[in-house]
Amino acid sequence: MDSTTLVTKLVRDGFSPTCVSFDYGQRHRKEIRYAARTADKLQLRHLILEAPIQSHSALRGHSEIPQNLSPADSGQSPTVVPGRNLVLISLAMTVGCGPVYVGCNADDAAVYPDCRPEFIKHLSLATQAAYGRSVEAPFVAMSKVDIYRLYVELGLKSNDSWSCYNGKGTPCGVCGPCIAIRGAKETCQK
Image (cartoon, rainbow, N blue to C red; front, side, top):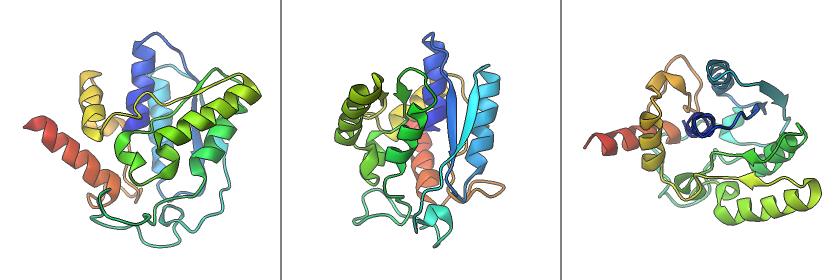
């Protein structure tokens, strides 16, 4: 939902970004098909890059996806892929486009260290020094509720994005992203 909202907003704001998806061995590769569909709908170039990240994260199928785990739960989530955004953003820089935009948000920052504002700030300083291009995370201070409101405002529907970590036929409803999106919808409907 975050990346779909971001790219749709960028297009609405007059940008024509190149969309980049990554196959890093995640079990929810279905998100790549949804990204391709979004890029096609918005008439944008879409690249799929291989990113063989070595990790024992649940996202790579090495353990079960935790159910009913909220960002408030303490400890590192088994879905953390250490260094994921560092590697993926670095790979996106090789495409040779302008700034790299990422959908990191305040709720993700609670669980994923490489979604935190200070990480994005310092990585952007490094990429500017090395490549003359920044890393932009316009949602970094926004909650999932804020992003969902924008998603709806942009005319996006529930079948326009895929966030479920299980990657099966329908969203599982019990993984972190499913719970977060359901909570955002419920909050917005009040």
